Image (cartoon, rainbow, N blue to C red):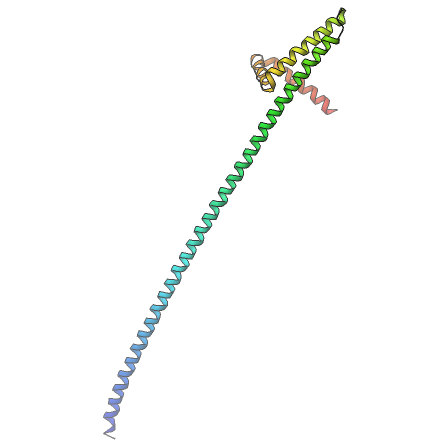
Length: 178
């Protein structure tokens, strides 16, 4: 048995070395696995960051495109409104000129067909002259010219203009209130 004891120690020494060696290999394998897991985690994080950046860039592009589309639509609406207002202004000018022509023709007709003598002849001539002159004025000046003339009169005579405005407002109020 005495011969067996040193063998046991010798075997135990080998077992001990073998155990340390296995523990070192296990540690190295664990470290290697941890490093690989860390690298894989870092790689996944980088890929996630890249994907997040790509999504953010795409969202920015889409928002920019949407903003451009809104600007284009607003511009188109503004152009359409401007065109409609311009057309309405042109139509109003045409109708005003037509009204002036009609007044002038009515004045000429009264002058040709109305009484010529006496008090009725004088009244007919005055009405015809006034209609003809007013018709020519409206034809020549148009709506914008009449507005300019009215603005000038109001600037030159503000108090009577205010009083006339109050009177017209009073009459409209009574008429619409009834």
